[in-house]
Image (spheres, rainbow, N blue to C red):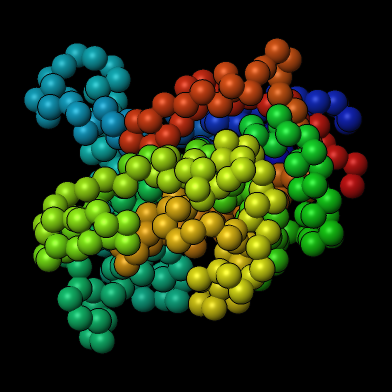
Length: 367
C-alpha cells in the first residue's frame, strides 16, 4: 500500500489518498489471508488477472463484488438477478456464485492438506475440525460457508470504515495526530509492531475506541429477551421472549455516561488505569488495557454479553497495527476546502459509512 502511495511522487512531496477505498482494500487483503490463506498483492488488478479452472471471475474480483454488493444481493429477488439485463446485477450474481465456488474448492483442498501450514487461516481451521475426533458437533459444509461469509463481511467493512473515520478525525485534529506520532515513535522506535507490542500502543487503541464511540459501525443491535421476564435496575420491565434493539448511537452519546463533552473527539478519555479493563486478564498483550471509566453497557460497538462479536480481538489488533504503521510513516491533513461536518456526514446501510469517500493529503515523515 505504501509503495503504491509513493509511486511517482518526488521525495518530500505530498499526495492525495482516497482513504475510504484504500482502507477497504487493505481490510480485504487482510481478510483474504487470515480467512482463506490467499495472500494477494496490493498492486494486483482484480480485472486484469486471467481466470483459471473454468472460473468466470478471479478470486479477488469475486471477493470485492461480494463485499461491496451484499446489500444489493440481499434485497434483489433471485429471478431479477437471473434475468435482468442490468450489468451491475449480472456482475453481482456472478460474483456471489464465483465466490461460493472458490470457497468450495478451498474447503476440499483444505480437507486433503494435512500440513501445519494448512491450519494457518480460518477456513482451514474450520475444515480440519470436521475430521478431528476430539471435536464434537462438527460443522457441515454449508455451515462452514456461512461462518466464513459472516467473518469476511463483518471483519472487512467494519474495520475499513473505522480506519477511514479515524484517519479523517486525526486529519482535522492535528494536535491529536501529533500526539499519536510521538507515542508511536516512542513505543515502536521504527519497528513493525508485533502482537505483543500492539498491547502497548494504548493511545492508538484509545483513538480506535473514541472513533467507535462516535461512529459505531452498527447503530442498532438486535437482542432477544430471556424466557422469563426481567426488571432492570431503573424499574423498566422486559417481557419474556421479546425482540428488542439496543440503540448504540444513543448509548455512545449519552450525557450521563460521557459528560461533559459527549460529542467531542477526545481519545484521552480512554486513559483509565489498566486494571479497569474487563478483558485485560485474558490476554496480557491485548490493547484493550486502554479503557475509560464509563458505566457498564454504555459502550457496545462490538455488542455485549455472551453473544458479543467473536471477531473483536482480530479487529482491534488489525486496527491498532494498521494505524500505527500509517502514523509511523506519514502525516496527513484534509484536502483544501474540506469541512469536518461534510467529510464525516454518514449514512447507515448494513453498517455506518461516510456518504462521500474520505480523501486526505499525505506527506512522508522525516523520521
